[in-house]
Image 1: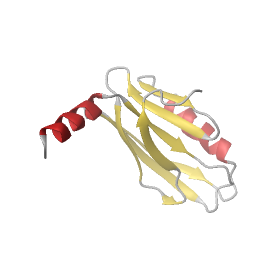
Image 2 (image 1 turned 120 degrees about the vertical axis):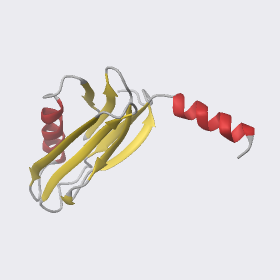
Image 3 (image 1 turned 120 degrees about the horizontal axis):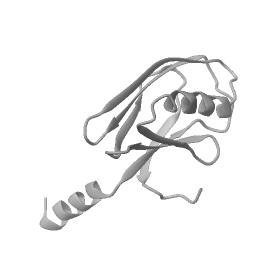
Image 4 (image 1 turned 180 degrees about the vertical axis):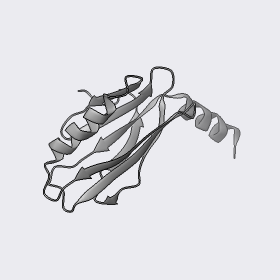
Length: 120
């Protein structure tokens, strides 16, 4: 690895990221039991399991379900995004590192982006 690549990697790691959970635009194609883990850079984990989503569920209802569970834990910074998305920023003390779904059946798409990258 060159010095430039090393410095670039260090700079990118220091930029705050957030994770976008995208529930899509179409009804859920299959029954699913959602299970996911949110982890921050300081190692804190928030695990959720057993959220039942039924075939043909509206993606907006899935967003509401994820948001209602997230609101149970006031330490986490989670907000509704545009369309059928949920944006996870982390906790008050540490930015998010990852959101991982371990669900059976259908699961939302998760992507990382620079914090504040979209105009909502």
